[in-house]
Length: 275
Ligand SMILES: NC(=O)C1=CN([C@@H]2O[C@H](COP(=O)(O)OP(=O)(O)OC[C@H]3O[C@@H](n4cnc5c(N)ncnc54)[C@H](OP(=O)(O)O)[C@@H]3O)[C@@H](O)[C@H]2O)C=CC1
Ligand SMILES: O=C(O)[C@@H]1CCC=N1
Image 1 (cartoon, rainbow, N blue to C red):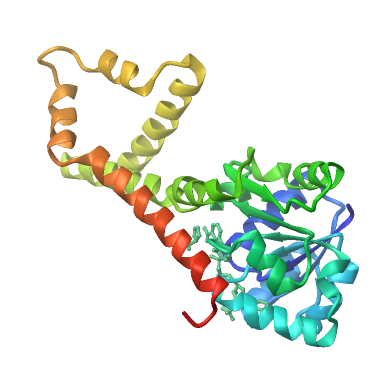
Image 2: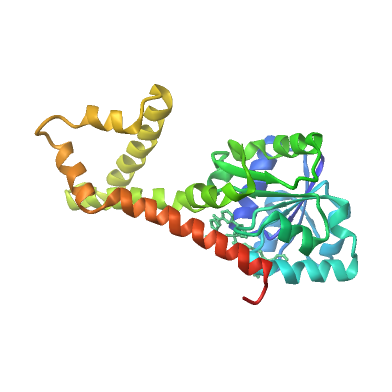
């Protein structure tokens, strides 16, 4: 695969394209973007070909087209392209990053079965996204492997049943924001206790990074490590008690559940545009 097309050079499309370019420096990139300043920035960053005025020509040019517009933009975009070339989307593989939008909706809206759903997060741009992948059943194994290889620069790719994409959206696509909220809260706590903001932020980032690394390197259950930190009658148990009193785990679990629910709602809305 030598050419990729990007429709929607916003936060996520750009992050994914950066990751692919990092592993394949010689790949050709084409893009279509309606926002003029984003278009210029992305054309420059990727030395890309501009398909913004003729997006219907992108699918026959690119080996893979990455769809990275907001879910509500999909019907208008697909109609505009298919009015000019009804077979456009059959000429390439389509990787959709759209939250909620199902493979079945993509089939129907694009008129092609050569579709793949991916749910990355913004850490793709540093090759550290945990990305859920669900393939159209019509896609042969060889094509699946080629796609996984092409997108390997985003970070770990998890092949999932399509229904599980809602969960990975909540945990990873959106979940990175929850982790960042925690980092910010930890930082502000440090500031309240007298640390300068910069040092508190550095400490908070370091602690969260090291906690994740400890779980990965030791293979221990997080709760086991927590119990090693909590000296009887010591400092940590005070903080752990405070988190429990404030229903910290329940709040995070509820955030994941409601986010997954919203992903399902977006899926329904793109199934039945206008609702
Ligand atoms: N942000 C994230 O962390 C993640 C996002 N996603 C998914 O990625 C998709 C993009 O999200 P995100 O990057 O945040 O959104 P952005 O709004 O940052 O980017 C989308 C871009 O697409 C442009 N656009 C809209 N319509 C068209 C069109 N017809 N042709 C070309 N360009 C168009 C928009 O321009 P304009 O502003 O002019 O409309 C905008 O610049 C969404 O579907 C989202 O669900 C998935 C995982 C994580
Ligand atoms: O908030 C959103 O809808 C998108 C999808 C996952 C992350 N951002």
